[in-house]
Length: 355
Image: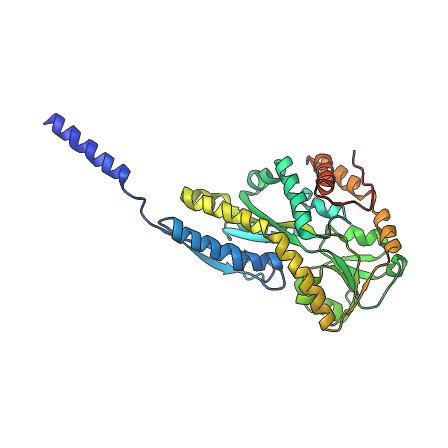
């Protein structure tokens, strides 16, 4: 009887091990402070990441993912998304790290070396190389904010839109121009008055004279219709900025089956890999759309651009020193980025040096 009972129990155990994992449906909240449409990284979140994860989980696993989507600040604002993911209000968040100037100070390193690659694909290659070379950038999301980085995204090439035309850097002295935060020092060096603002506030602020320009890439300048109150768009070429992140709450990720986790990580990386192409296409659409809607587009004279670039030659060192003082690897990251941009085939117009 003992042998028979033991054998029976063993058979039950083997059957249990061989049984398929019970299918489950997981509901995840995903959102961003920016709307889909004018903001390319949010559009790629809504139109690529969400449907691709949904499709692959349904086809490749026994499970199902259902996303509850909240873009345009309907769940968390542009400066609240990192915290919303950390606190579990959102399971997955897409956000610009530019709105976390303290918590993600060093992750904004592309802003600290302006006049870099104007091609978003080239810029993304360089930034990914830095993340791979300096693991601290990826690890900080988990160690300090309880989340995992799924993929990077960005903004297309930055230029300047103003209510009045200008030709020389000195023409901007005393002019109030808005920006996102980490790029405001570009304006300070030009003598303009920088104003911290967000895209959703831009139209009314330009219309009412709160400020008289925006440091902005064409996809958003068109999407938010800034060309109506501020029709002069000057091509400066500060560079494309891969400073957006798609992250998932670490507890949420750990609660998912391993095969679902694997799919989310793979789709997150695919989201990143397609971002350069998406942003380059948005740059073209933006410029074409601005021209079609009557904006006055001009290219800044090369010697004026060089003057502005040279005024910022000490900016990378300044920011690296600041980051070092915050116990962040500032010098390592800035040197890695400058080298990675060069390795990606871009020739810097300025000889940045960081020690």
